[in-house]
Image 1 (cartoon, helix red, strand yellow):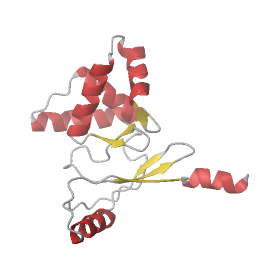
Image 2 (tube, one colour):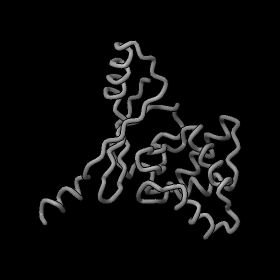
Image 3 (cartoon, helix red, strand yellow):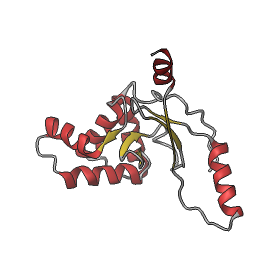
Length: 164
């Protein structure tokens, strides 16, 4: 679980959706994975979004640009992208965001989720992940996966609320 990244910028990878998809294509090639056109398109739409994308929103976006995108096709694409660590699922809002480190190993990531604008900040913080893991093990629990989602207001929404 040793990650030494300071992933606190919610726009870390989304300024350049094409660059993000290119990085994932490179990783897929290196790992012997197949990034089909549908998978790449789903990834591009998620990476280009300025907020987490729900599966049904992704389906609608894909239908606009890909015509015959059926729900099972979109869900299979999401499963592939999740399985290989290219996206994260925010379970509490049932939405998806691109991973800041698509070429790295799979990792636990705490997220800060704004309840007003839906901005999701990937907060890759080794200390938080390790503390949860240690505490669980101290209780005799053998953790296999972690998801931590903290809800509240992002800095912009908090400022807007304070000034209104």
